[in-house]
Image (cartoon, rainbow, N blue to C red; front, side, top):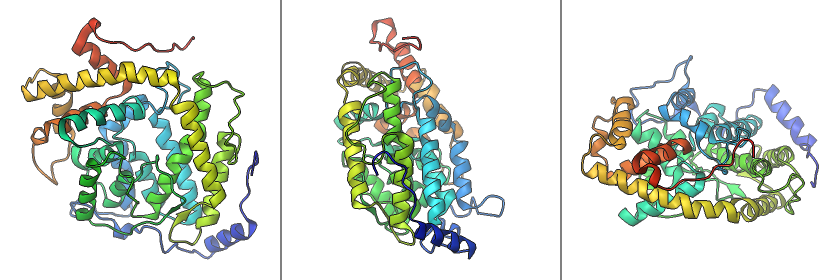
Length: 402
């Protein structure tokens, strides 16, 4: 496969064309009529707004959706609009997952809903911010913060949008740091099982590594999350000056650049998964994926310069902001931003038809985590300056013109 765009096996391509012509319906695809919500009396599907299309629109119009635009994907300290932010990442995931889902005959609305919502609970400063917040929460409560859990919490608890169980499950189970050769969906869950899994996720530090999506659509989105960032992060590393433009990765089995990697992974997944009740990759492609991801960590994600800034600047700032906000919350300082810009905001924007109650009744540490996780990179830095003034820490940014 080295350096080439792989073409789909022509026998399979003809089978897919033939199945489409005959109106074939994948028996393993999620069905709209199986959609489950906490409040079944609301959001009943109709011709204009089918079940999972409702989830897509609920997510798109969620107040926090705008914040994707200034949340770091990998590279935080760059004034450069050509470096990927989460707003683009979730769209790329959706595009790749919909491509695979279309070829497999899956529910594209459910795929899109999971894709657009899967990172909505992510912290500022990417996975480094997530690690900082988890360490602090664990110190106070013995529990762990994981962005996949926070995404589900944002959709289900913070704003109470009556999102379907299938979409929530896909967001909860999406963690793209844990690749598998084969994803066998667990089948339809109920909210009792889902709530127990959320609770368990808070008790482990690996982000719910044990979770497998309930639907094929969730499985497709999970692998598409990895496909979307694998080659794109390499492009961004060049843009950010982490590696030179002519850098030669050793792990080039999937292809030498992002477009080839995406094409070849999609083709392999469809060839290995069509007509099956699971999503899979061939052994060679799976090994190529693992090798590429491992090299990304070694060369990009754990780069000494980037890591030093996170460890020496971002982590202490997270600690200071968390402790100040927690203190203000416990003192009931209604002038604090945690009240004026978070609690009041949530109470104003959450739906109340499904579960009445004041957000302030939530656990204080969860409220602080909710607020920090909701922040964009710029918002976090501006709040830090507001709380600690010019005597606080600062982070040097690489200018547009450097």
